[in-house]
Image 1 (cartoon, rainbow, N blue to C red):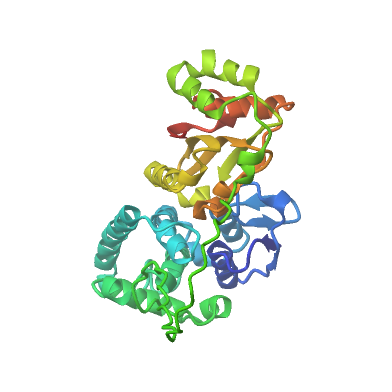
Image 2 (cartoon, rainbow, N blue to C red; image 1 turned 180 degrees about the vertical axis):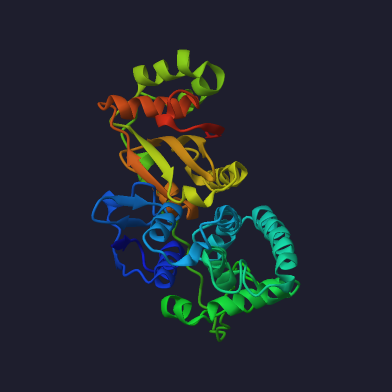
Length: 382
């Protein structure tokens, strides 16, 4: 059997630990783009099928042996697996900020701290007279709970925060020093200080030696930098007029028909964007805050672009999908220069493709099929 996925991804490492305790031989391989059925979740290749997702793979591995890692496959084990998923989702955004994948949003970080503190309080009380979560040895419960916590203990769970939960810390340290765990993770170095976003330090100005004053020459007027988009041939469609149509008329009945009638395909291009890490957005408000912050940082684009962003999804997986109208035939510098650009994929909309055009219209109207995704909220950049 082969586990496909990034070897440094927490889910892959957790599955390798499960395999070690079950004494099942597995190899690892790279997850190709064609295998990414549900984002970056790992895939287990067997002789008979491909199994996708950490929970499904874990259950499958446990069914392949008589080893008592599930402690008789008791129903409470699945409760621990459910809690592990909740822990992972609670901490994912916070860890993502420390890893540079997410923008720092103080209210979301504070909510993560509050939620994990509540989980730790209950777990700390539970572990008062226990070495392991179930019984007197490592079980799947320990593996999945610790596996969900390891990225956070490495990056964001700083000493002052966790010292209140001594029983949790004792149990965690016991787990990460087990021989089979070390063989997969290596030596785990715990976070030593609270993560704080880095601010660029201003470089002190070098003091220059005073030179004898020269006669001042009349200053030459510097040529004003011209935006390449301003040098494009005049378009038959005015972006501001489109924004007025979108704001003041019914989207489906009037605004969209106006767009298709007046769109200058030479002067403007249409793009569809998707957030790259939807699995990090457990709660809809996280995705909403990300979308709002994204648009606030797009002020330089206002003259050259328009965007309708929909927050879509459910069940701990919310994405941000956008329909964009840009001046010119590519993504403008004013967009690509924004920090948030790196966490969104932009694909040019093919208006000759009926499915692309329908999806673009759905995103503009914030309703319709939306490719089967559940509508949650909407934001507009205009």
